[in-house]
Image (cartoon, rainbow, N blue to C red; front, side):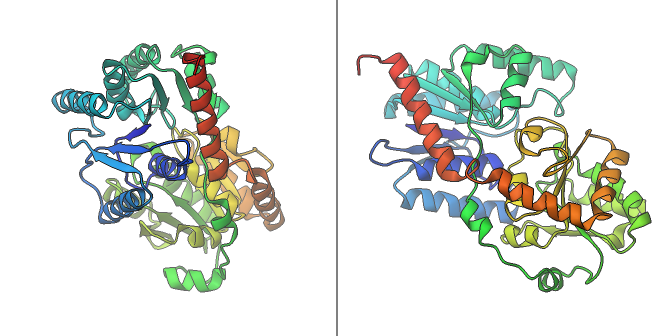
Length: 392
C-alpha cells in the first residue's frame, strides 16, 4: 500500500502521515510513501523533511518523489503530477492508496482511479471549505470534492465534527466517513520534565510574569494576527506577561510589523521553529490556538499532554478536542476581545489553570496516541478490503 502527501515538512498532516507509515505492521503491509518537492521550505522544515525521509527508508518504507506535486494550484504542474502518479501506480500496482491533504487528495485520487487501484482512502486533515479562499473558489473546491468522493472508498476525518461538516456541505453521505483521531507520542510528552525558570532563561524570556504561547506555521489560516490584537488588552491588566510565538513562515515580517504598530514589541518573542517544542510547551502558563480553520489542532494535543491549559477558537474539529470549561476555553474566531477575555479569565485564576491542565492530561489519555491511530487505520483498510473482496 502507498501513502501520498504533498509536503513532508513537519506540519501536523506530515507528522500524522509519517507516524502512520512508519508504524504499520510489516507482517501485514508492504509500505511505500509518495511525496512532492515543496518549495520554498525554511531551513528547519527542510531538515525535518530530510530526517523523516531517512527514517522512513531505514524502516523499510519505500519512498518515491514526484517533483511536479506541489501544494499550490498550478494547472500544468498538476497535470504532470497526475500523469506521473498514474504511471507510478501502474508500475507498482498497489492494493491500496491512502492520500493525505487536499492537493494530494485531488491528483492522487484521480491517478489512483485511472490506474484502477482497488482501494482508495483519503484523509483531508481538515478541509479548505472556508477560511482559505473567497466564495467562488470555495464553491469550486466543494464541487471538486463531491466528485472525488464518488471514487473514494472512505474519507478519514480527524474528528466527528469534521465528518459532520463534510456531510453538511454535501461532500458525501455519512456512510463514507470514519473518524480516526490523529495520534502523538504520548509517552514522550508525558516524560517531559522542565524547570520553567530555567527554560525561561534559556529562551531569553523575562523571569517574571505569565507566559502565553502558541506554536504553528506563520500563515494566515492560523489567525495569529488576532492573538497579537488581543495582546494589548491582556497587557493592560498583566503588564509583565509575555507572548511567545514558536514557528516560522511567510507572515513573520508582517507579524513583527503588527507588534510594532500595536506597541507590544517588547512583550512578544518570536522563537522561530524549534526542536524542543515539548519542553517549550511545558514552560508555558497558557497555550493559545487562534486558528480560523483547523482539522483537529494536533498541537493542542501536545500542549494538553504536558498539562498546559488552552484557549482556542471554536472552528473545525477543535471543539471535539477541547472541552469548553473543563480542559480549556473556546472563543469565536476573528474576535480579539473574546480571545483577550478568555486569556484574562485564566491568567486571573491560577487554580483554574491548574485544574484545566490536569483535566487536559486525563482527557487525551489513550485516545490520541500513535498506536491507537495506526491500528485504527489498519482496521479500516481491512474492513474496506473485505467489503470489496468478500471472497478473499
